[in-house]
Image (cartoon, rainbow, N blue to C red):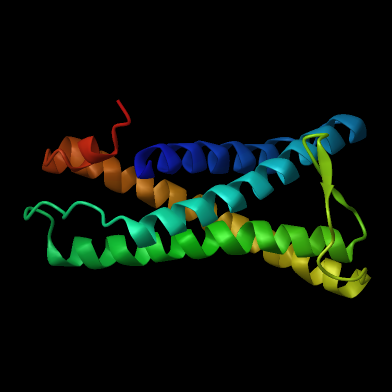
Length: 167
């Protein structure tokens, strides 16, 4: 379950970053449609992250191989903590932003996610900036995570990445 959640969340995050960054110059209606998917996907990421945290609290991960250096264990712990924080804060900041901007989130056309704050233009403006900063931070962490996995696979050859193979 942890492996599947890892890949579902990871692919959803990469897709959402792509939607946010690559659709800015689209015509208004196409951009609006892409952002509708972005918002729905963000809320899905939030729900999957809560599920993953609950799973993690009730299921201990396998120990790391002894070949993993102490500084790598520390760095891995820090990066994973930051991932979990961002996986919660990024969708929440978007939700608060949309609520403050009085723009309800339509969840894939199925239902509307209720607002969690009253409309407030100043709050919306601040949250817009914070949401973008968190998104850039997430992009940097994703890149770092992928580079670390590639290092373990091709430089260290310690088969650490095989632990995350869903097949």
